[in-house]
Amino acid sequence: MLVPVLRPLTLGEVLDTSFAIYRRLFAPLLFISVLTQTIPLAIGVYVQAAGGVAQQPALWVLSVGLTLVLSSVGTAASTFVVADTYLGSSLTPQEAFLRSTPFMGRLIGTSLLVSLVMGMGFLLFIVPGVIAACGLLLTPSALVLEDIAGGTPAMARSWELTRGFRIKIFGALLVAFFLLLIPGIALGALALGSSSDSMSAEALTVGVLIVQSLLQILVYPYFYVLTTVLYYDLRVRKEGFDLERLATSLQQR
Image 1 (cartoon, rainbow, N blue to C red):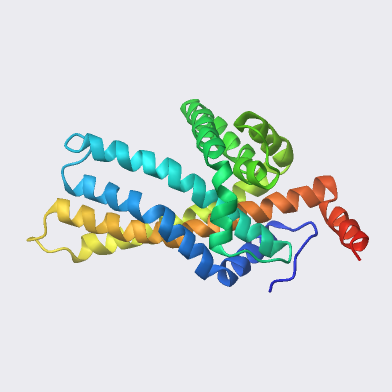
Image 2 (tube, one colour):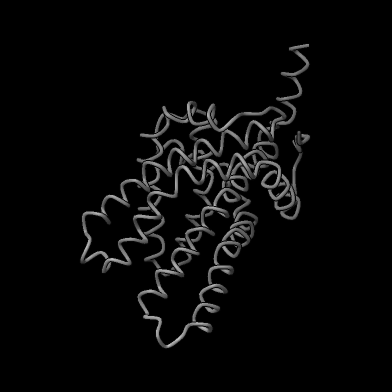
């Protein structure tokens, strides 16, 4: 079991700790990722193969709806598994799913609200969107780990926690972004380079989408690990969470 790292961490230490937890929890996090992402991703690939949104609007709506519902469950379950490990305990995926159920509605609403705020920010010449993404990154973590009643208070909590550390968060997000983006670009370029004249553009596109979906299933759990580690790092820095945990453990002896 990993020893909790309850002290202020540099960006490099945040990334190292996140990779260590990701490796340690690879099997349970992959299990959660497969259960919550495979179906909507498969429907999305089929929609693309069957002519796109214009030809399959009902299936596209279904894939979006399933993504919202299942991703909320996956976010909460992954966060609980990572948080328990980071604090020196353990949690099975089954237990994490059971604990996540009450948060599903709140997470769906919060996800839509955060997406709206970030979308408006990106429309305003990109930079406000990046600031919003960094400032609201910890919203799901705060919501489920502190059992916050609604999306707006959870967003306010994330905004306050990240104040003064958004450049650090931006650096962490860049790493997570490139982990997902670079392999996808490389595979797409490889597919284009090795494609034959007999292979249609549609078939090539579907093939690349399948590979990118598999990469998403593998890489997304790291994002949840990273956000959870950042959440506790900022609580240690700003609220003395490490001292709080130490005091609690001493009282229980």
